[in-house]
Amino acid sequence: MKNLRIRLVLSLVVLAIGILLSASAFRAVPGTETRLRRKAADVKVLNTLLDMRRADWAAVSTFEQLPELTPRTISDVVAQARPGVQPSIQQRDPRPAVAGWRIRSATLNFDDIAATDLARFMELASADTERPPWVVVECNINASDTKPGHARATLTLEALEKKDETR
Image (tube, rainbow, N blue to C red):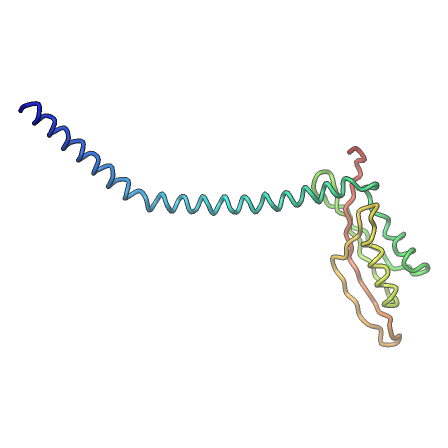
């Protein structure tokens, strides 16, 4: 009988401890749930950043595989598009990019250019498949009042280049 009472008391103590631990766990669940939701949101953001970085790596890989790692000079592109047309060209200092690449930038001012010649220039600048292409990042075109089909244009172009030829 004494053993039965001891077992009953021990069972009640274990039951009470179990109830207290369960109550404690239920109180902690909302805070834990909030923390887990925040962590899940952080993981989602990190996965998005990782996907963006993978796209960057793929782009760098594409450029690394080009036969030439420097773009054609902007003067050569202008000469190919329209021989004799000479815009004023302002080259900017290259800015660092990723993995040893730099961004070259140039602003071209055409005082009087035919719209077809401007379109040809923009097409040739961005169509290079052997070298990094030039990309138009800013464009301001004002139609000429005196010559139909002609305009004043200011273009800012950028291209990647890698001076270090080691691959």
